[in-house]
Amino acid sequence: MPFIVSSNIDKVDPATRKLIRRHVMRGKRRKKADRPGAASLASADSIQNHRTQVRLQEVLDMYTLLQPGCFGPHRYFVNFPNEIEASTLWNIQQVSMVAMRIMFPLLTELGFLPEGKAWHYPIGRDAAAFHINAFAVQSFIDRVLRRQSEDMVNPVTTLHHQKGLKLIRERLDGDDEEAKISDATIGVVLKLASAAQFGGHVEIAQQHMHGLWEMSNLRGGLRVFQDNPKLLVEIWRCDLGIALLADSDPIFYRQPAEPLPDYPEQVTSSFGPSIYSQEDMQLVQDLNRNLAEVWLVMRKFCLLANLGTQTRMLIQPATIYGTMTAVMYRLLRMDFPAGTLDESSRLGLLAFTHHIFLQWQDMRLPCHPLSESYRNNLQIHALGDRIPPRISLWLLMIGAISLFSVSDELWLADYLRKQAERCGVKTWKNGQEILKSFMWISLLNDKFGKQIYDSLTEMSDLVLRTD
Image (cartoon, rainbow, N blue to C red; front, side, top):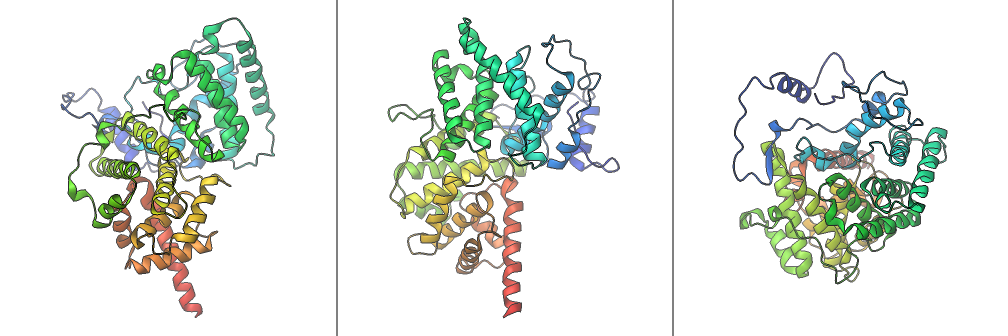
């Protein structure tokens, strides 16, 4: 049965009750035949691991340093090296079950993940992979769940990090050429790159990504990882995230002559003209042709995601991460003059795609170059004549939900109020309709969008009472 996180033993939420009931009834109903043609969407009732948003405190409560007698409902008879403690392996297993939901909520909430797919890093008997995974999990617990500062040193985390580095260096200096570029070795280097990225150590993260690029080339390119989708997706996400953090070109697909990933078929097929608002169509006509293509693809992806939410149909993972790579690598290659509609739209698309594909649930990384570029662009041009008011409202709200805190950015609150008035927004529903006419994923954005709207309303009421 799937692992269920619950902090209330007296009352179980409806989604969990349904999950339990479905598990109990398994085998008591005849299995329905698969419907032909359902390539991009799959029924949510066929998925066992569909969850609501993770509460970080629940994960922290779940985490334990006690050494269990077995791991989960089954005992594992894998001969791990002597230095691998059963309690640490238990922690890796427990946290890994929910960590992906925090790191890539869109994929785990809307993605159809069939049983048997390799969506976890291979550890097996690989001691180096174990220690680096233990280091990553403990760092995740300390930095994300316990909100500890980077200055606080955890000796257990440091020990695993040092052991893992020592083992991987010995492997790379050894004679086993196959082991040097194995999935386990690549997974170790990827974990190190992700940890450096999360800590803001840009140069170290880039060095690890260069190593990954060389290893993948020795293996024959990224296509050889198709059978390990979790590893492949995290290579892409890490590369894109580091490129945005460093304000530099990505490591993969960085050569101008190198072909970029194709758009998934599901987001390039025609949905009909009725899906576009008048402002949307006018914007597409005014944009650079390649940028307009990206805009339309993301518009269709949002419609597909919202349709999946409304109909309880899940999206094939390849459609999600295929859209991510095809769109974001193209946006990073584009270059437009500052202050133009093209550049404002490109930055808006980068902020939006960073939010839905790369951002960890509702966590924001501080001092992000994308934040600085976005802030400068909005402060100069958001209230000007170059950007239509409704598009400007969308750009401001995307910045508010993905990059900034409205309470800390008083200019943003002021700009949002002014553009909302210009667009005739009287209620959250009015604003939501405008946002959805461009790009908006209700599952991820509605909650935070309404919170921002309510906070603006409260601030306006306070100003009126003060006056």
